[in-house]
Length: 260
Image (cartoon, rainbow, N blue to C red; front, side):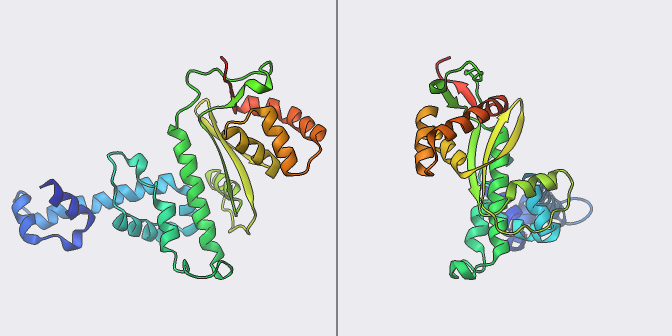
């Protein structure tokens, strides 16, 4: 009966009328199919509401009707497979990439707006995941007095890069703006959660490389030397830049003291 109910909700068009009459109590008014139809409509309405909450900027970019069309296709191809709605959109960006109509075209011939939608979906999923990700529990935040070689990036931290300014677009939508479709522009970002608030920081390429190396386990001094070498930067200038950045990154909660 559970298997039948799940199939009836996911694929209502193929529901067996005889099984519906068997499993659904016959009401005094209406039919078993009409009674089941209430749940079939409510099922997708609830999932669409959740997806709009998880992808508000993508919904704005596509418009509600087209967003619903893409989402319904996603839910039919990849129905929920988890007990929690938290996981509902985890495969959405991959689905959009796999189903794009120009997926077999040469890169130069692919539609720009589709690339933007996929990037935006990936960014919004990363923002959403940060809300419930493990934090700095058990490790105090680093302070100005913490030596550089004891700095460690906290667990609720991520870096990402995209071919469009997705962070700016996302925050404009969240601020109830109406941003236009942006031109292609490489964006490097850091995401960090502190005090129940996720913040987005735009990074330069050397800053991105520095944090990438620290995420891979390098100490801050070693990461600074390597990133400066990678971009042919003067080490003294790179050190001065780091000294200027360190306090703001400490304030944002980037680092914990690994020895504390």
